[in-house]
Length: 264
Ligand SMILES: [Zn+2]
Image (cartoon, rainbow, N blue to C red; front, side):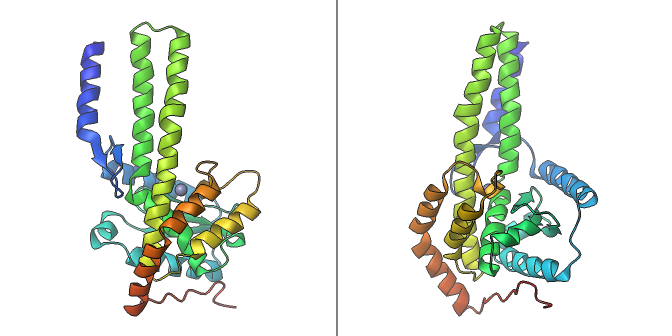
């Protein structure tokens, strides 16, 4: 019985091993359609349970920045998701994007993202998570972890061994992958915002704001790992390339002009 499920697991892994947009090897077990369906379900639930901003000074502004970011995607990336953005009335300085292209922005984000370029940096980072299928990867990893623990139990491993596997898979698998995912979303986001004509250097300014302003619970994009310094350094390393991309965008007439509180 165990041999059979181990073999099935192996087949699943072999068929599910793929490469991310930055050529990182990743395991995705679920179909994009299934992930999109789940993402949409969670999104609709949030829209019905949380307070959605109806202030056009916020919604028009966020929609404008999101439209520019999404317009800079490759046609296939645009078509692969049904992109949508919602502004939630909440003091936390945070944003998210669910599989299927469902983006959420909390109004508290305006306290750290001071201009359209900084907001674009956050949105492009979140879009990067979707493009690289990070939600799928996370769900797959968690399923494999449970399968590994179940397999160890079937094999009669002591509870201490099972605990060690659990702990090991959290530290050895979960954390480094999360770190890789955040760096990857940073890299994808930086180029994406530049391609949309936003100033990529503002991504570093955003980090500085968040670093100075982070509350007791760091927002999604201010995870404890990698450290803000590491992230800012790798953004700096990619900045020349991003600035060149932005220069091309500007010369092609891509000059975003989203104004915060446009109705004021
Ligand atoms: Zn992130």
